[in-house]
Image 1 (tube, rainbow, N blue to C red):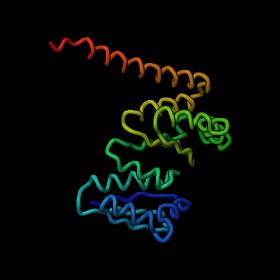
Image 2 (image 1 turned 180 degrees about the vertical axis):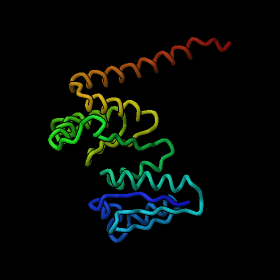
Image 3 (image 1 turned 60 degrees about the vertical axis):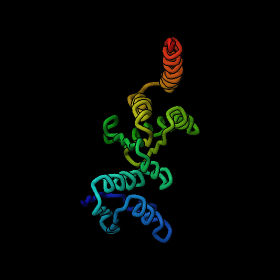
Image 4 (image 1 turned 45 degrees about the horizontal axis):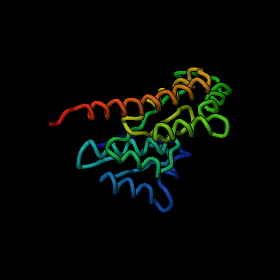
Length: 188
């Protein structure tokens, strides 16, 4: 099994790491072999084991290529964590100024909006190049993506914050309701 993906030239040093440590860690943790062509920016991932190892390594390498640190990208080794990439072209046409503006909206003043989404949904967000990428558990990825997409679509920060708070309150309410159902059961 073999996969080839492209990584930007400016992210290749991060992928390789000091003395090749990051590349070696990915190979060891995913039981794959990684070959990097630094001239073309192509990364070849191969494994004799199975497609799953190659797929996991590909996601980690893609995350690093999308601006995540290797430490954050290694969260993708966990069974229930996924990478979601949102292309900004879906929301903004070819305007460099508008790309910068919309990326700034996702981050928020002093990073507050990004930090809020990350903390409420136990996620990690990278705003890099022409994408916004999210690493989160399968349970939280949809909510984190929805919040980011609302901002990209032009929703006010206050509207998104209210929606996040509302969803957090509803989660607590759902948990209480489930506990009440269990408490109502007569075990005699």
